[in-house]
Image 1 (cartoon, one colour):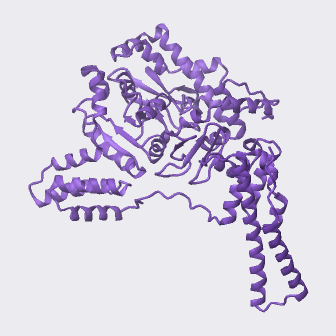
Image 2 (cartoon, rainbow, N blue to C red; image 1 turned 90 degrees about the vertical axis):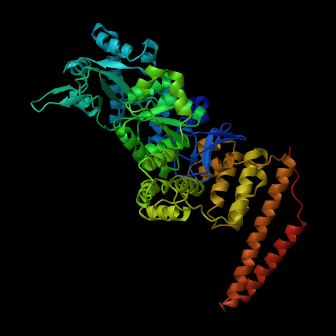
Image 3 (cartoon, rainbow, N blue to C red; image 1 turned 30 degrees about the vertical axis):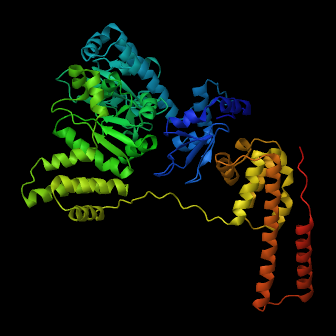
Length: 587
């Protein structure tokens, strides 16, 4: 790829709203001049991830991740810098032109091919050939607006419809196979994977199509749902259907509703529950749980009201509880799914069920108790049926409360229930806390260097008050000094630290720029800088004296004239420290 002009990069930076961008992936809440949320780059329970809208940067105080819109997208989506620039440029309407237009990578080819296929499926639904699909959707209660909103399409009941369309566009069938659209015949050639089905596009959080899922229209079609295979860009273990549409409702409602099928998602949206998502033909995975945990703390499970749905709910708890999520469960009537309940009782009834959903563990306790509690064996069975789930609850207070509820409902002593839960916990590793990476130990010098950098960042006009050369001489071996000096030097030169800095200096900048500090005027800041410089000088002098004293105590050979010279120099410096007045503040 060719070089992207600096002017283009700057134009994109100026248009991107970092709070809105990161808010698609992380549930952010306003906190002073910053927005805070759970870090998407490491597991944590207490938010330490900060986004500064004024400076358009982010920083996590738990794992030290930080940067701007480009670095966030690169790290979160595993993109190269040019890929992140092109993606953000597309989102904000800035055309990214490069001097070299070589063949794009496989990922981009697959995304472009998915867009081509999606347009084909949409056109087929609108054509006379799509009448059977339009009638089917209307029978399911989906009017034209809903179909348009969810961008539903139709795969004709032919073996070669997509094959022929791609051939007309000179797209190799091998690429269609890599995208999951075509299947290779044993006898040679390819045929369409989806045939005679309504088609749902599956998108990532940024709205890019990853693959497709097809829903059968007739009772004789099997399977009912046919999902495309995993590809280079489509990983089912971490993808939710309906996620882009659910992001904003999820933030507003502070919850996610997880359902089983595509039509269930549509039904919830029609009922006013826009935060609904569905897995794509797989059970919930740890990747799904992490994706949910980044956006909300509360999840509502809404599965079919049959034995399979109840088993799916228990399996979901085994995945979601260890992720620190608070899970509720809607108990649908036997034989119902969200779509049938919506058709029979209306949107208000369906929404009320979701809003009033009890904690899922309460439902598990009730189900265990319903099998009988008349004998010691039945009570023991009830406790042991639920104890492994209670043991998965991360928060010790929540775990204790559910343990007490289990004891009360079963009539078993609390200490016996606690013993059962401890036994279940010993069967796996469930830490009470998800530990963040241990921060590097900081000494007073680290703090003072950071204070100087923060003062200059807030008051760039005072940058030349910091004697950078002297500090480099006084602390030649300090790892913390380098980033602070580089940041201060960039500010003094009038450069933009968010653009010019890299590595530890950039991390320091993002940390300071997102930190809450008491605002000071120029005079108070100048005084603080002078006091910090004096503290650093004293620190250096004390270290020199200590080193000389230790050398003598160890009996090391020390030149007496050199030692006398060092002592006299130390005394001279001490006198200068106490007699030298600070420079006046320049306005």
